[in-house]
Image (tube, rainbow, N blue to C red; front, side, top):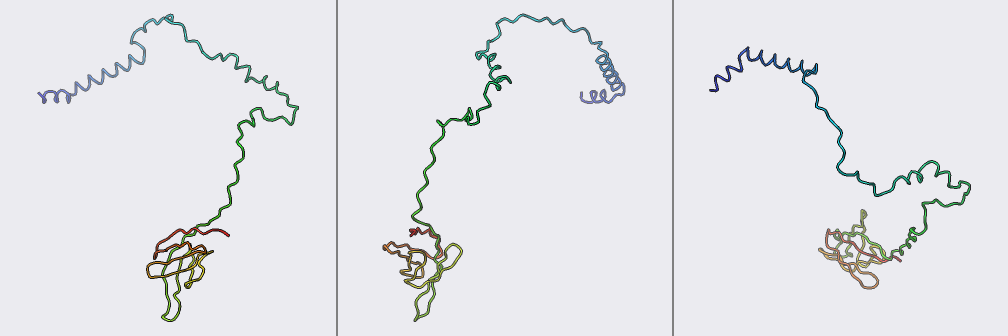
Length: 176
């Protein structure tokens, strides 16, 4: 059954018949020989059109060019009509001055000779500080003890901070 259908589609006469039919359809469409359009009549609406709940007819007078002439332009000290002091927030109070400052310290290790004091190596941001035991590192922080694994810093009030080897620690120092 498949074979006869393929033979018919490949036939020259079938192709010519389809070609001629398409040209006839183009001719009829171009010259309007398709027939007459049906008569279309306007019908009355079954319901009333919806009414506008907002009366916009009075708005034209508010925004028209003649409304701009009603504002007196002679007063120079007049505040903008859209400005009000009612909604202006009070100025924000200034924040109190900071009493402490934070530093990032990293204990990098120590070195020293058998008869001399140990010198500690502390990294403060991008700079290195070398200080012996008892010396000031920053502000009021002093080196109180040093070992291979940790560095102990003490301030004037006895508060201690322990820095581990190669670990960044944020230290808070009071401002004087």
